Image (cartoon, rainbow, N blue to C red; front, top):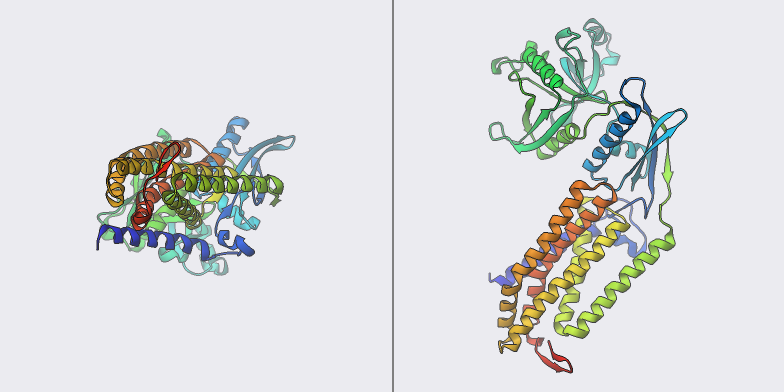
Length: 474
């Protein structure tokens, strides 16, 4: 198979994949022409969303009130961003009866779903597992007596293959009140392939010295040998990671951990590893949240503003397309086809990834339209130079791409780097703009170097220089 056929195959596969993401509706379908955008999540400014208000319980902490509210804000912002809801908004509010956090989440259709998107509002802690059962212990007097005997409690948890398990949990490791680790600060949470046991593993580090020393004591008390794994004694010495009274992980401690750098293994799938990493990475709340109210919030932008913005974008695209045809002829038609291709590609990626589209995101899309056209112009000018040198169309196309590829890669790479910086240091709508910008620029580079080249090769017979008043026209 020659290079042209490979390009045709790749171009076809990519656009089919993008259209599949757009046309295979996985939720509520929009009426009319809006059907094609049914899988794209819209932000608060366009569609509205769910509004949740929480009161921050400051009774359990002696820290400065402002510091606690700031910490809660930071943790919730990280959780929402980790879940992909970069467009969700957070607001701090101080009233006579206390401090509050207001959360507004776009594209959420009910409050139950919205609360799950926020993440758990509980506190993360490490605990000891004493026993487990697959039946409801609250209906078994013997199991409830066991909990009272050990001063422990039964909590639901996640077992292997995502099956539901009840674990008998005790915060005090080995019954010692001085061995308790609650709300540790965790950093450097990473996912890596597990070369020994297969699957994936999660690594993390504790930050505070007190947490590191406590974790060392706890792990030294719960260490079990390989030969003991599976025995009754070992099952009663497992370590649990508990968040919001739900056992997120249960496993054996294989060695004492003196430096706070731990490794969680268990032949995890990539999805399981990502879930556990997100729990550890998202941080723990320094205070309990009490839900005060929940409801629906209307779009922050009026319908007239949204329609005017969309019309401006559509007219801008139309004018660009007319200009390209008028100035570049056949190659202008190819540029317009590339523009349409990249637009569907971008929307398809947004649909597959579940990224939320807002008005700043639409601005990012329009910016990538300029990037696509700009890339085509660079290529076309190189091709015209080759045509003026007397080369035939196909030779000129090959030479033009050879001369412009490095320029295009360098130009787009700098834009991608800028987008990554915006995403890393930004939050909320800034990240939404960065996402559409990065996706669009990568798509533009693919379209310029693969799709445009394929179409120019197919239409090379129609490409020629023509005399105009100002010079030469291709």
